[in-house]
Image 1 (cartoon, rainbow, N blue to C red):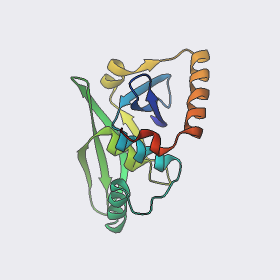
Image 2: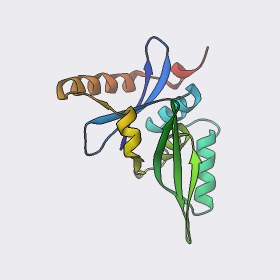
Image 3: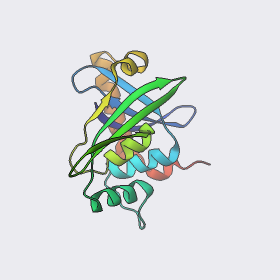
Image 4: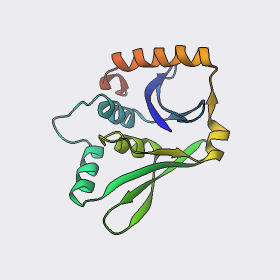
Length: 158
């Protein structure tokens, strides 16, 4: 899957992270919190903060320990809640650790090289959304325009 970006659902103003199948036409929208949306947008836009955000700190710790985020896996959807795991690898071993999808994606977005993102087929079958080609092109263009105009402050809760 690829990380398309973050958008805000109208009229609820709830942020959504949008993933797209690399070899397919399904999208996977996942509702996330405003802080995680801000963290993902900052990373996607290459914005730096005066002090490290939590995901920046975690990446720095991993880098210092010579451990790399190898992949993100959206593992399940249970009662409307998505679950994920991050796969971390170092010199000797690989570990999978439970994570919220939003945190896993915020961390993945901080790597200069693309971190593979996967979603379990059962999750895609249950929550995946298909767009027809014309709708998809319009949606992608609207989403790109949104990403070009959005600021992290737009996700601040009131």
